[in-house]
Amino acid sequence: MAAPKALVAGNWKMNGLKASVQEIEDLQKLISEKNVHCDVLVCPPATLLAHAIEATKGSSIAIGGQDCHTARAGAHTGDISAEMLKDLGCSHVIVGHSERRSDHGEDNDMVRAKASAAQREGLVAIICVGETEAERDNGQTLAVVTEQVVASLPEEAEAINTIIAYEPVWAIGTGKTPTAADVAEVHAAIRSVLKERFGESGDEVRILYGGSVKPDNAAELMAVENVNGALVGGASLKAESFYGILQAYG
Ligand code: PEP
Image (tube, rainbow, N blue to C red; front, top):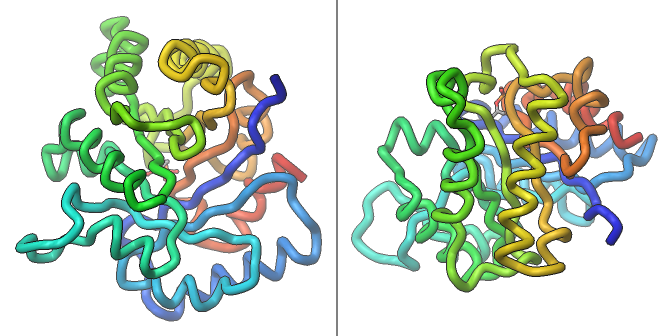
């Protein structure tokens, strides 16, 4: 079966003011001048979602949220539901990012409930998993990551509305990356879990790599077997560096 079309997704985290939407417009311009052979998604902070959606109308850039609540609506001050993201025009939402797992104590059960809420509303859930440095040093990487994938996948998930992002916690925002061989090993393990879960369609689920992806290492990382794109933090904030990463699929 052919590998799924790659997706490169930008996670702006808690960065960006209204003026930053210009970066998405600049990115759009760069893509229209020289097409790239991957899908492109930008996940700005919630305050910029409406602006970003307006700015990308009619373009090939999709817009997604960085988190959603498990409930559709209700007394949850400060939270945003998957229904609200869908209503705005988002197509994807990131769930279980390691910063949500550590800053907000989100465990696999919570991540699974959030992914389920997203998929119920017709969004694609980008489920993040990844080991800490201590877990890697202890040789627990494969056990931790496969357990996170199994436990974070909703029962009703389908291949079509599921993306897994493998992001080693120690590689996020640090400039450190695993070797291509290490990435290949983890992605192969995730692929096995997905095939066990979805059968043949497990091959259609995109598995993204995330953690210090930059224009100068993207081509090597994206060439690894079972890597179907990237989840990019810091380097997605500027159109030029994000476009540099997209060049891996030029
Ligand atoms: C992320 O937070 O999803 C991420 C991969 O960050 P960075 O690219 O900055 O390491």
